[in-house]
Length: 180
Image (cartoon, rainbow, N blue to C red):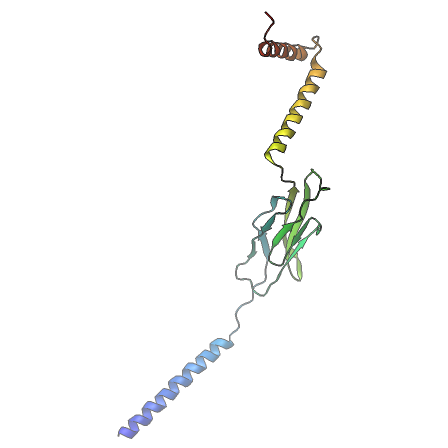
């Protein structure tokens, strides 16, 4: 009887192991569903960066269950900004010939093989100016403004000119003490 119990126990173990292996094999053979990317969204669609700066975009695909896709990153001006395969954009360093005027570059992400699924960001690139230069630019702008106002409206016959002229004369009188 002991032998029979041992044989029965061994047979039961073989059945359990075989049954478990069969269920694992069946489970592994089932195909998981395939979802195509329907939309890409970048974390920013407008961005301002200085020369020499970097920024790494975060792209979100929809549906979130999408599988088997590759994102393709592209800059429309590689001389101004490059972008790597992970969405890291690098703005070129400023040079002496770099214009003071801001420039723009567009970075686009799309799904490989599906050019209709894409998103983009327009980046404004400008020089990083120091505080002293900023104050100087503001002062020059104000000086130009006041010079223009004074030149155009110093004629007392104009009503607005008279108001401005009187205000300017009063200000000058307060700032410059009269000779005793």
